[in-house]
Amino acid sequence: MNLVSRPLKKQRNLGVNWGKRLTPILCLLGFLHTTAPITAIAQETRVVNIVNQATYTYTYTYQGKSTLYEGSSSQLGVSSTPLVDPLGRILGCAGALLPDYTGFSVGVYEPNPSDPTGTELGQLVALTPTELPDIANNDIPGGKVPNIQNVNPYAITNDPAGVYNFLLDPNKGQTDPGKTYIFVVNPPANSDYRQRRIKIEILNSTGSENNNVVRYVATSLDGQPISLTGETRVESTVVLVPNAEVVGLDLLAFEFTTNMCQASQMQIVKTGDRSAAEPGDTVIYRLSVRNLSDAALNNVVVTDNLPLGFNFLSKSVRGEIDGQLVPITATRNGNTVTLSTDVSIPVKKVLNIAYAAQLTTDSLRGTGRNSAIVNALRADNRFSIKDGPATHKLTIRPGIVSDCGTIIGRVFIDKNFDGEQQTGEPGVPNAVIFLQDGNRVTTDPNGLFSVANALPGSHAGVLDLSSVPGYKLAPNKKFRERNSQSRLVRLEPGGLVRMNFAVTPISEEVAKP
Image (cartoon, rainbow, N blue to C red; front, side):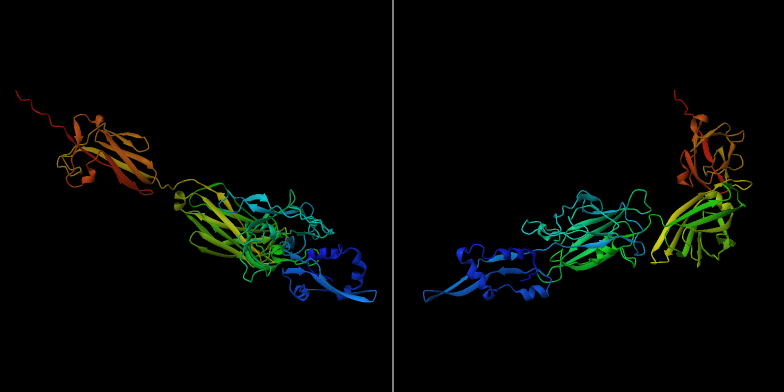
């Protein structure tokens, strides 16, 4: 009998304790029959409870007297739970084999229980040891090539190229719904590739009990796609392997979760023809997009955000690859400039884009810093990649144009308490006003003061009453907010603003006899 389940190897020992009657019994083995549902096992790859029991009858004749013997063997109840057999292969970004797998390794980890995000690595999963070839009756299950001992982590080899496998044990609850693992691919040191992390979540089965169906969701933790169509989250349904050394089941989810793409597939660099400029000047920017991947790049789009006060000159745009002109389409929306081309960037080549922008007077109020990002599609698998932002800082000098303003004001004797100086209301000389930046200003003989080259924005001034002995703040009967020792004004770029302080003499009380 050739049964599927590994524990049936024990049936070789049937009848070993039948003593002196062993020879006639062996002669009658053709009469033996089993109650095990072999047909069901052969047709379905699922776990079944096997009742391994044999019955027998025979007639023994001695001295002309025949005796009928009947009996049955002891019952062997077998309930076999197989190992889950995930196979896979590390592939390149487009699904092709890598040229060399030396130094690559893969591992299955528990999530770090102290990490609320569930993305950090915990302990390595303790996998059940296996062996190949499988030695009978030693309680060690059979393994599967290439990871025949089920070690974790496992070092990838070039023969077979890039293949790995791990066996998860349902008897340890490793395939229970709710179990979560992090599958990790470690590239060799100084590699163009970076570590990959994929979270595996075991879901509830949608089938009936003991149908050996496992559902799980694979989610990329590093942002890279986990399928050749670009998805970063994939749900798979797989059937458990009843015998890992006999039945080979390729769990595709594990295969396409291991696509390896270069850590940096594209690079953008932004430079300018000068480090400082003035309003009215024209600055020329240069964008260099380098293809670092192993495939050509299509649909290249550069998005450049210009600083405040920079006027993009659309007719100045030029593009080239290896000295050959490349058509560039330029559009502008506010301060955002979009530069695109239908020409592919070959492997290891650079697309250079140059354009000009003119500085306006508003550039004095900006930062002079702009940034650019680039997006493209790989030609082989249409994966979307991007790089940036690449920034450039231009120092803006005022030149002959300045947005600085002037603050003027006066300290005067307000006789009618309206807060405004009229004829007959003289100024107060040598009065001191402190500004919010710590500057100290003194009035002239007419009570006037001014502050030139003040930056735009809000400015506050406070009258020092100790500098005007014999005077106090004059009450303002028209504007309540002016009944204060301080003033707040708003200076526009290149503007002029007034800051006045009204005072009145302190009345001397007449002493009574």
